[in-house]
Image 1 (tube, rainbow, N blue to C red):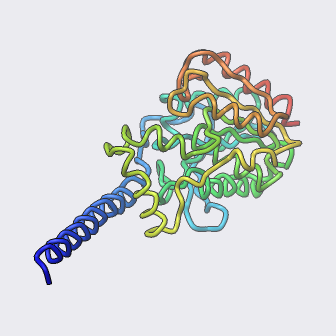
Image 2: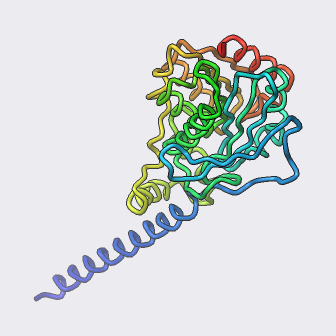
Length: 302
């Protein structure tokens, strides 16, 4: 064997070694990130509680896999009710920058009872990875089952979801017609562009690693994190009422995603505002937010 042949064989072995080594490193980082970055942050304040009459409740998500924690806030004589579902890394105590409970109190004062829930993996609910609405919808459906067991009637049950909660309530409303009126605020139509846009900021890793993380998450946990596309099912909510809220200045879930939701569900009412940011409309004009949402439910929850 000639020296040139030996050198060629050595180079090929070296290339193979480098490729294998880099692949192990790449997918190793992907596996670590998939294991650590898919759990929600636990955020819950024991200093925050409704001012209206309320009770702590616990029930199982529909399907029975996770226990969901919540507050049932109510007033004698009310027969309508709305399920509130927060966004990612939040809970029933921290959404709307701490104004979530105030919002619930305002609904109750307006004659609409509220069931505020902590989505799975959040707040005081059971442990779970997040799935961008694929499984969180069953938390909303579990809340619906609890309300029906308490005597609330179909036609008088609504929901409002923020960001991840919006995707979750879209899925739940599609699956169960007992939810008669839905509001979604700052909700994505397709989660992959959102993940891609926020990946480096949230993970500290270059976007180059994102495909490896998605591959490893599917291999390790059997889930495709990028598969959540509420835009593909939102049309099934018709003929029930739907209100889509979004700020044009949202840099987390770009306004184009709200336009995609509306294009898929042209029967929906919309409230699109200039400027603002992700889940910021409530803070921009709190009283107007109260009035707009209450008027929507007054019209559609009969």
